[in-house]
Length: 74
Image 1 (cartoon, one colour):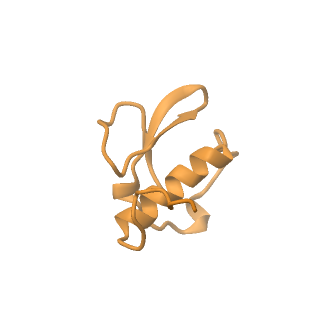
Image 2 (cartoon, rainbow, N blue to C red):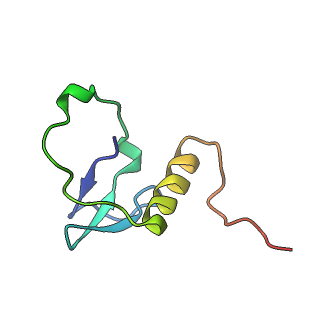
Image 3 (tube, rainbow, N blue to C red):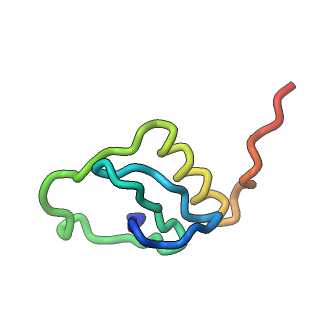
């Protein structure tokens, strides 16, 4: 689970997304696992494909398995 915040400061591991029509930061540097029993209710919102790609890239960089630089074409 990646927590979100509407007031967290910017960071390379905190991509900005829009959740429920509010600018929010994904706090990738605070990722954690939780038991599915603690997940209740309906989702507040969903990430777009682009936002999900940004989250995946930030997470891969945070875990040290990818560079933040986009792949070179050609």
